[in-house]
Image (cartoon, rainbow, N blue to C red):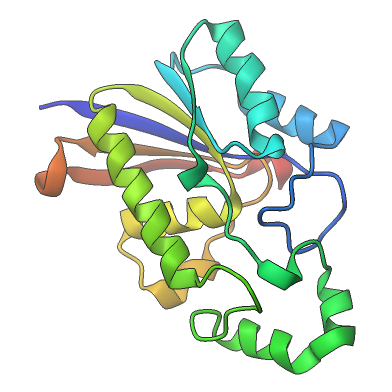
Length: 202
């Protein structure tokens, strides 16, 4: 039986401050680079790095893979959710523009998609499909997946068997690392969360 180990790494702090940042392609701050360097200070003998193509992930993943001498794969399916017309706006700005819409989103994000945004159900399906493809393509390998808070919540909620409504109860700070073990392949595979380290950005 093959064992696959996936380390999920969220990007570090990006430039631009706290705001709805899905497809907005901000690079990392100096602090963000330091957070990710700390999180990967002790490499775990990965066989490859898979990354979201957005700058806050790929610009760190690319030199890391080169330094370790392992393949790098970019996969847009692991990109963050698209917030549509809310992209780049802070919660304070949205409160001033449409407080009711923001309140509805906080109350039930599954039923209240922001204007022009990717519905949460479609985002979940996209990430779940990408996750299954990754496991099928790299069974038996040790993979570092550099991605986003939303992507990690989808994957970890699946691993932990959580309900969709519990998705946002997962705390995923910048440069958080979670290790997932998958024994076997396909529908009979046994998946478990081995560790969840929030220390770099807690």
